[in-house]
Structures are given as structure tokens and as C-alpha cells.
Length: 341
Image (cartoon, rainbow, N blue to C red):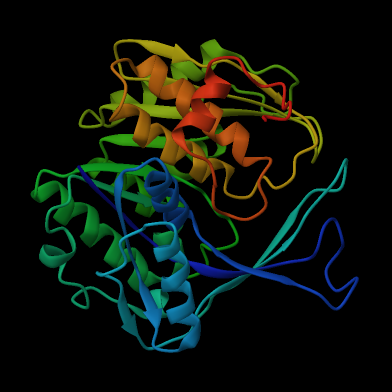
């Protein structure tokens, strides 16, 4: 099977360690972005993964493509265009000080791309599974139109569509509400991925869930998934991540999956001493897509996704640099962190 992801990849500038912005004169430069992170995960698991975007015709765009290729991601369909590369700045939190992200992505090449600029017949050639997120349509009005065009084209070709709803309040600035756009996009989605806030803000569907409580009520998440699937009868399943945030360093981490018939809940991990949680949701999405296409049971697929994302919290950078054997060891109960010799 061939998997294609579509969205913006950015230059990521991170303050070293747990420093605050410009505490020193250093910034660590890497690349990252929701859909690219998923493509890297899938490539690391041995899947045939492609990433599509529009990048500037300059050295930054070229270095970004080379970085993706280093992980085995197919980049041949990436287009080059006017505009710049988006940037995001990251300050790692600790204890009660939260992490902070600042976006600088106005006039990026992908935000300037518009319907008609992309030949979706060529982009979807040979593709079996298409992944997009709620971040891309939030970037700009033209990127929103392009995103809707992409899911409609994918469904017309019989391609499975997965979408991480990914609500980003700091991006929806061009006059359209997230729910106005995402409720339309959801009509074309087979597999939805979200947390409770994503469902509430992107689809305006809610149940009484207290995300601030120490323990999350699994039954209410079952009801939330049911409401989404009842609203979108073409959707085959929804996975909802369950993050219990005790501090910036300590999170409880689990997820549930609802296919309208059965409700699955994963093992819960207590993740202490978090190294970098940015990209954690993308690592879950990549793990779920892999799991649904590699295991016989949805329970196993869900456990793989949660374990993969658990490991990502220990890895600096957007990309989840683990393979199938790493994830399966944790799934099997080997989470001691002892040195392997």
C-alpha cells in the first residue's frame, strides 16, 4: 500500500534544553509539521510513505526535502512555488511551566497555494491511503480551499482518508470558524483522530468531559465517539487520545477507538520526565495508520499507536525516530528503560 500525507512542513527553531527564548544566543534548527511527522513515522515502520506540500524554490526548501529523504519518505511529488518556508519557535516547558509554541508562517509557500495549482490526479496516482489534518485548512483561506479539494478528490478515487482534527486556535485568523470548515471536511473522512478539544472546537460536538480532572471518564469518551459517528455516517471510526496532564513533565497517556460497533480502550502509560511532547499526536496518528494496516485486531492497532506515541515523548524533535520492534517491545510490557546490550 502507498500512503500519502499532505500539509505544511516548517523550520523548527527550539531553545536549547529547558532554556527560555533567547536565554542564550542559540536555537536548535530542525524541520517538522503534523503531516510530515506522520509520513516519517510510516517510513520508519517500513511503509511506502509519500509527503506532498508546496515549498519555496530556495536552499531552505531543498534542505527540507533532503531531510525527509533521509528517512525514506518519497518527496517526488512536492511542488516548489512562491513564498517562504514557515517557521515555528518552541520553548520546552518543565514542571508547572508549560511549553510554548510561536508560529511565523504567514505567506509561506503552502499558504499561498490555491485550488487549481495542484493536479490531484497526479498527486493521488497509486495512492491507497491519504492523511491530512485540521492544521492545513487553518493556515489560509486558499489552503483551506485546497484541503477541501484534496479530500473530495481522494474520496472520488476510492482512497481511504484519515484526518487528525488538530484544532489550533492561533491559526484560524482569516474569518472562517474552524467548525465551519472542519464539519464539511469530516464528511469525506473514513478515520478520524482527535482529542476532546478537537472534537468540541472543530466539530462542535461535546459531552460533559472534564479534561482537567486527574482521571478521565472512559464512558463519556465512548459517548463522544458515538455522537461523532452518528453525525457522520460515512466515517468508519474515530480514535480519541486521552491525555492527563499533571505537569509539563508528567502526563498520563492512553487512547480509545470507536468503530460504531465496538469500543476499545488502550493501556495507560504514566510518562514522567517528558523530553519533547511536540509531535506526540502525530506519532499516535502514524502508529494508528500503521496498526490498522498491519494487525488483525483494532485493539492491537490502538495499542501500537499509544505505545509509539509514548516513546515519542522521549525523543527530541518533531519526528518519532523509532521502528516497529521498539514499539512492540513496549507493547509487550518492556518499559523499564534498562540498557540493552
